[in-house]
Image (cartoon, helix red, strand yellow):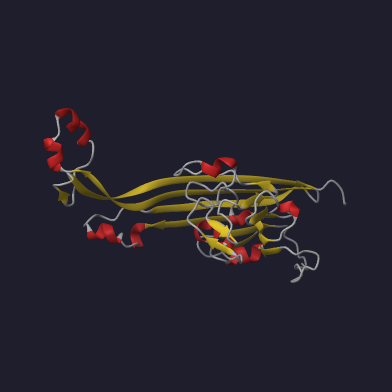
Length: 295
């Protein structure tokens, strides 16, 4: 068993028989010019993904590397060659991943399956873990009819499969507010620094179930996040609470007391607060491959 300890708490291990062996690696890449296709696409392999720091452990930064793609603030997150950001199509191992529903806007076109199934934080961890991704391809123009349905970009993700050796990866990324500065607006108001806790952990494991015939590959990724926030809102002023009828006072007193300036004309006061929002993500996948015969 060989252990390799990498950066940022990453542990790679390989289970192999304790015998002396010689390994010959043959690599073959796609030709730089494909004479049989007029499609415009960008393919990113596993070596590039492993060596690139992907923010949030999602493959969205890879989409931004594709020519013709610009990032947006809509539900689809990016636009391809001027198309709408909800005109892109995602597939994972050939299966549609356009199953997303927005949680902060009206359903609109998301109810028709035009937005990928991002998680509650807007990431793609729930679709596929970056450790389980074998290849990423973004098609942007003049692609063939097999990539139909939408006129925007076509994002294809292929996951890894098992081999005749057991391979696995364990990771844990941790961050807290010990070394972070306070939010500028919270510091201006004299409010304490809200807690920040981020634990991103998981791993992958693949190998043979029946040597040379059946292989498996499984992955799990969990996220426990407590994200600091700062907000300034208007609440009923103290004068408004005193002047209101008794029945209305109960409603106004349900709001917090203002801790900022109060406006006598509008009967509103400013309330500022620092707090933390919790979020939890659990994503798992299992892939099974079987070779029927030598063909």
